[in-house]
Image (cartoon, rainbow, N blue to C red; front, side, top):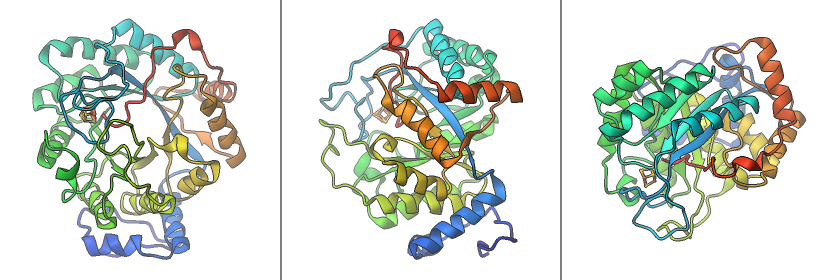
Length: 359
Ligand code: SF4
């Protein structure tokens, strides 16, 4: 079946992509690829709306896994500060601030191999509390068994993030402490429990072009395509094995966004880690290619965060609005837009935020 690229036909959701087809998309002339992606995008989304999430690390560092890009792995010598599981009240405080600054989804990440049973009651309280604030809830806690997935679903968790990271073929070069199949099993448990799946990957890990195609093929061919697809550009961390890997050509990153948009027409494609290093023009190209979700102010409360204002200025320049979240009235959305545009860094809470996009 052919993906349609004209203005009148509607893109079909397919779960049977072949690697040759995906490579074919990557090899299109750049302008043709972007036109195709933008056409598909407009069939399913308002092209001038971007969904905004905030991410909080609820437990940082000392992770036993060996993901070769990650500052939180206990196996590498990085300057990350290890923290215990955050208190529920602090999490809710951060969620309230995120809401007042325009986020509609609050993502909570823990650097774990998997949650332990003793942690689950605290996790459940966090989900319930954030949900009560009217925010969509998302968590990324590592591998989940089916009982844990059910518990989180019952608590009201909307999304669970678990990335495939890279292609099946390249996977063993990046992680050896859990298998690619382990990741697929967690996604199955999340899906079977009835939660929405957030799953994507990282590019710039020293992989081949065929691995980027393979990653997107795996995601698109899942039994149900993920609701959110974060595409991360590697942030090189000194002390990790990938600390000095070669840079990926930025156009290759834009191509990944465009191909993800074409293959997963109804998913939110999220411009994730690595966005801070992209200039405005590059980010605008990514929105053009079909990205329609970002993390906003991930480090909002740890630094003076000029990026927060820069995001709003870029949105204003491009005429982009934020997408309305669950339980938001038009008035609330309007107020959040205003808040976003006047977001002021609150340095009193300087220890609350940390970028945990890759947990
Ligand atoms: S990416 Fe997640 S699982 Fe891997 S080392 Fe980092 S925190 Fe641990």
